[in-house]
Image (cartoon, rainbow, N blue to C red; front, top):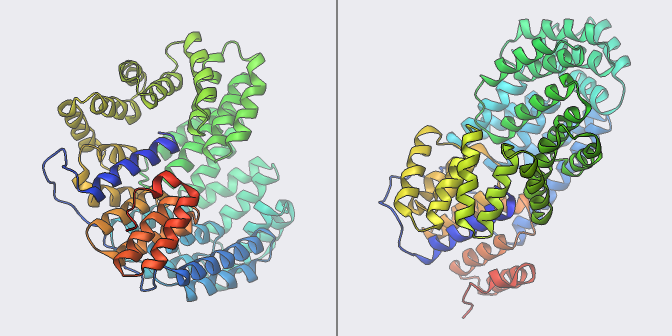
Length: 503
């Protein structure tokens, strides 16, 4: 589902919640997201606090990237000490600190989190992906983090690897072996890289990041069968959160890129790898350059181009390339799925249903099945749509697109479903706004305030944030501030702002 469609879905769903329209199904037992509500007021105090934290975080991150690691650690520690309780922000920073090797700081944040499904999913995935077998010794922590910064961001792989090998004062941990392997990999000494990553995995077979590095080393060493075998092993590990599922998908495409023989096929997988990393413009450039030499692989190239353009909200280009792919080969999954989505967006439901059904035959993923269910609903076949959603939800109750779409049939399950989405996709702004909408409907303005704080942190210029903020302020009797929020909402999107009666 592309971003604009997802946003429209959430807007329509929330309008149903707030206007009190009749629901389409029987009431279900809901499980509210039990987050700790912040105590600050949703007003300029919150804006000042969040802007300070953002600036401090940016400073800490820049210092790490520039190799000033001790100062970076001090900045992150200061953020931890100052931070008001906020599960979203704690998780966001916890991921980054674990990536950088500041395990003491990430662990400190995790201990302050509320205990619920939302936090449990992320903590489990973060530790499984990044954490060494035991906590890094305090005397080694900054040294190792500095080594990581030097290898990854400061083009000092050879010097840093040599220093790590010769430093007998540090503990011979799985994490040290990982860093040595990473240094050898970055300096293209693949034989030594493989030796040390094997050492790390023997010491800690649970760390997925180690196995991902080994898969890349094997792929770069032309050991394609071993790389593919390891990928299959990695894919058996269940990651619940979108952040880490995307990391696994990206490494799959990277390995496919390295082991592909034909140049157009290499370009295809490299572009997919870039796209999964959020570098969609670079992905399209690589694909565009490969079109002239890609006759044999034209359907795949065109299909991926169409899908990337669709997900980047460029429907005309998406239509052009999806149709070209479909014309070359009607069995091109991405092309068929994109044509289905485009027809659905244009309310051509009969055509959309045809393409979704064709896509379902080509792939076992949920995307096409969700498309069929939402199309039946759009065609007013609510009974059939509800039956399909129920079947899909029994099989996969944590698919964020499935949960979001099914709310059109089961809006009364919002407390449960929106919370489930938050537990697997912490940076989905629409979900925080959705949870704020539900809290407002229930009259829980303190909790709405917490959800809105998270939304503001993700995107301070989201018009719906100011819409819901105005409702919270009005409920608290702050009419002037409420009107100011509506003015800001109106400047960002006048149609949306008109939904509120200011009288």
